[in-house]
Each structure stands twice: as C-alpha cells, then as structure tokens.
Length: 383
Image 1 (cartoon, rainbow, N blue to C red):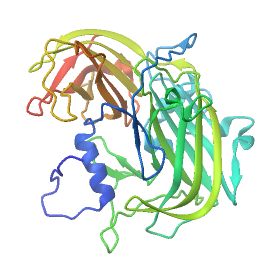
Image 2 (tube, rainbow, N blue to C red; image 1 turned 90 degrees about the vertical axis):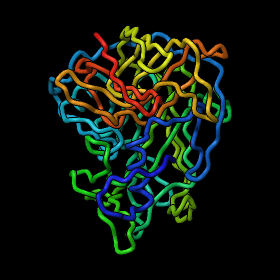
Image 3 (cartoon, rainbow, N blue to C red; image 1 turned 120 degrees about the horizontal axis):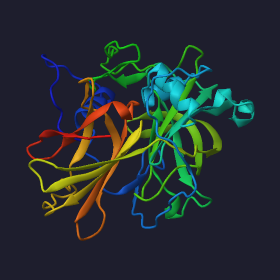
C-alpha cells in the first residue's frame, strides 16, 4: 500500500475501509507483475503462467456508440453498478449486444440458484470482454449485526475442470458489496453521491444490504496470461462457508457450499488502435492499444529497459482517459498488471480493467503514468 496522501484540510482519522479505497483511487495503477488468484478471503497465492489459451471462433463486435436505448429495459444489479459503474444507456447497450448478461431475465433463472443451510445464492449480472470478467452474485437469507463485515471463508474462481491446474487459474479479487463507489474524481462516496459516514468508533458505515435485506458478492477476474481470452469460456465460482471478517480474520457463522458453472459471453467488444507514440521522459513507445468498454491492453516497444527497483518495473501504465468532449477520467483503471513479454525486455504490455464503463469511440487520449517523477502524460489515439 502506498503512503497515505492527505486529501482533507483538517487532520481526520479515516477507517481502514475508506483509507484503502482512497489510496486505491490515488494509486490504483501500482499493480503486481505476477499472476494472482485469491483463493480465500485472507490468503493469496502467486503463480506464473506459461501456456497460451486463445479462444478461437468467437464473435467479434465493435461498439461504435453507446447512445441508443435498448428495446427491453435491462437492470444491472446493485453490486454490478458498484463494481463497474455504467449509465442506464450503457447498461442497455452492453446487455443488448450480449457483452453483459442479467440472469433475472433468463427463463430458467430460478434453476440457477443454489440453496444450502437456508442461504440462497444466485448469479445476478456479468459483464465480460476478452481480458476481464465482472460477476455479481445475490445472497438472500443471511444477516449480520450492524457494523460487522460479511464474507466467505473461501471463494475459488477458475477455468477448466481441474482447479489445481495452473492453466485454469485467473487473477481474481472479490468482496461483499459495501455500497461505496468512487466518484468522478476517484474519491469513495455512497451510491447516491453523499460523503462516507462513520459510527461513534470511527468505523465506516457500510451499506451491505439492499431494501430487501439481500447482499451481493462482487468479483473482478482477469486473465493471467496475456494470450488467454475469457470469451465463451466456462468459469467455475465456488463459495464456501459464510461468516464475518475483521482485520482479515474470518469468523464462521454458516457452513455451506454454493458452486456455479458460468458460461461467459463470447462477444468481443474490443477495438485495435495503432498509436506509435513515444512516451515523453521514457524509453518506451506505445505501439498499439486494444480497448473495450471495460478494459484495455496497451503494447509497448522498449529502447532500453529501466533498472528494476524491487518489484517496480517502471513500465508506463495507463491511469485514465480524456474524452473528445474534454472530460478527464484520471482514475479510471482498476486492477490488471504489467510485464515484459520476454527476457529481452524489448516489448512490454499493460493490462487494466476500469471502475466504470466507457464509450470507446469517445476516447481522444490516454492518461499515462510514466513513473518519471510521478508524471502524467497524455497520449492521443486516433480511431
């Protein structure tokens, strides 16, 4: 975690949750180089991926504009709108184009629910592109005392039939949706835009439940190999035992297993854009970008690779975008990673997801963090 940056005029002691979300907003692009799968709520496991698994024969679709309302209104779940924010029109278009899927609209929706120990969990909404899968699951029948953080003992996410096969693993992060989202400046606020509240002990007041008393678990998964693709794959999501979390320690409350096999959409929403722009202050050239409404992959050529400083490779990373109307989204990216493609260090890439949906055709430039005195530069892209 990076050093805390003061964003208030007075000395204020922030709770752990708000500190984490605020620091992520200001330093969300400091990401690891290795693949990672979070197998429990308290433990992680690093791995290296070697085998490419490109999905062949998938449909390809470029979203030219997120501007037309869908014929049937689609409602993304509360957790998905907190996981990756989207306007109403964006929700309609991505769902109509089958990039997103709302499970409550499926004719067999009731058959998708899994009940164990009186707790029912069912898939709610998914949004997928080649590199990232955002998934939310609705939880009913489980309640925790006010001020407690609900969670699972373990959550396993993998592809294929063997969860121990390294080719099946993905990068994953997940948590109960707490009702807190970043605003346009990357500062955490409640869903309605109001400032974060605190209880008498200074803890963040989180809104885990909706008006019906249900909760949602949100997952962000990304490929662990740059040549892999999620399109059309089957994703296994296994939840085990419910309880509460406090300072990364799990306290069990309900024993149970809730397992799902999710078939991901096979429609690509990404566009390839040739850039060929030198990044000022570095020896990197941005060759191209593959960009979708929910993630991007940036490809670099490298003159002389900078000296590595511990785990920091100093590869430029896209932090946000500038839209054609002048709107700046400087804290857009959320999750992903950077790597050199081989030991020669002549080429590198940055893969990043977003915290909100964007219209690819509206993007005029990328905001890039160069790590040269923490400078941000803008790289124009043409489409």
